[in-house]
Amino acid sequence: MAGVWQAQLMQKVNNEPVSFRELLDSPGVEEFLELRGRFGFLAFHGGNLERRTEQIASDAAKRSDASFYGVVQPKGMRQHIPSKFVDPAHSSKLKSFIDHCEVVVAIHGYGIKGRWTDLLFGGQNRELAGHVAGHVRSSIPAYRCVDDLDRIPQRLRGVHPDNPVNRPVKGGVQIELPPRVRGLTPLVLHWPSHNHKEHRFPHMEHLIEGLADAARSWPVAAH
Image (cartoon, rainbow, N blue to C red; front, side):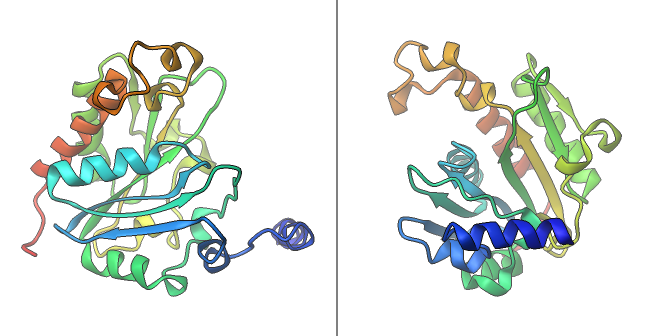
């Protein structure tokens, strides 16, 4: 608890937001909500923090008629609010998303030396984790999809009950993506036509399609 308090104190000294509500009220931060089906994708660490996570979640949602919630931080801002403190009491849009969705998939980014091709599937809904991991595994076989919680670093497991991914009625899956599959390594950034939207890096494109396939094939209640 002392560590959390000290971190919050330092944020106050530096005039940085210390709550999800303060983050949403910060200049340049954008919040998005698209309600469609009861399968949902969310990315609340998007924009300049965990780059391209909101693009992956948004595109997968559109392709599968799923719902989407995202928070995008502007260039120059990298404020990390831990997932367990991303409170729907601070956002009517997040609350609407959670109330509307039966299950959700949260898209995050991470980087650990030696795990550049590991996609980590955490969250409390382990049946859904296996389902989504299976579809992604088929779509990008060059990557390792880890859906065994014991093989995921504890801080990346996403199983805290206050994490938004676990708040819908049937919970959800937290996916941690390394930089490469998001198109952020030096090799990928020099991929031909990489900066043109119509020529997205193939690994990221195949990932999105795998996520959309998983959403389309998972049974949820009618709208």
